[in-house]
Image (cartoon, rainbow, N blue to C red; front, side, top):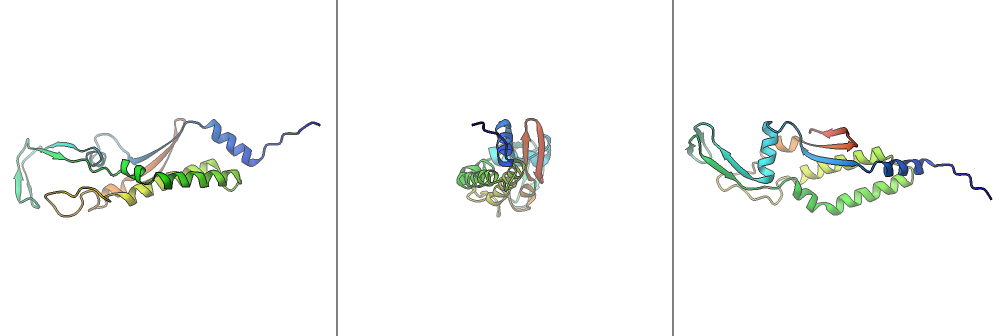
Length: 168
């Protein structure tokens, strides 16, 4: 008996997925390393020191910071904490997408778009939750203006070809 092999749409989609071993998702704030919003995102995620460039009055503290003063910023993880807190949710999304791909109801590219949007949405949702509050001011610096949250985007890199989603 001779078997005739006729690839199905599902089989073709799964083959595409298998060939595309190098699909990467990047979530965060994108731009040049010296852009203001990238610096803000980095100092919040990793902490660090900021050197005051010129004398500046800070109303919430009621003091003037002199040029050369070093301000130590604590780490207020907003990006890595999202993945730690939402690992199960991300796994569920991926498993649901794989099932839909196998059923022929979703393409690999469609799945990647869903995952990308979910990653940036989860990151925006988690921003500021459980983060150490500043000692010398009211509010939450990462979320007060919404600027950092609005700058979060996601990229899907298909072996060097990148598609972006969201603000980033």
